Length: 81
Image (tube, rainbow, N blue to C red):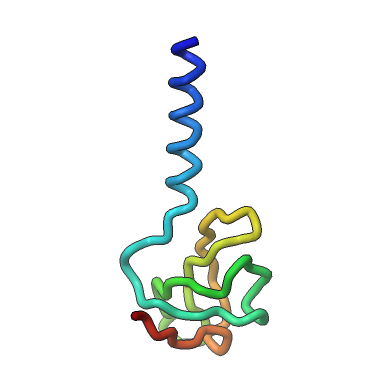
């Protein structure tokens, strides 16, 4: 029974690591043109040299954090409290 509990704890920890939003970056909102996300709330991680593409971290429908390159026209500032 102990190995089963250990495996369950390990699986839960690995799942949660994939669900955590990165702490570095700028809070942004990615609109629907940027992709099909669970929530548009994300973090801006990087901007390309030509300022056409932005690398963002957002949650997908499975609540896992995905890092994607999207058009910067789909990325908007988000106010934090």
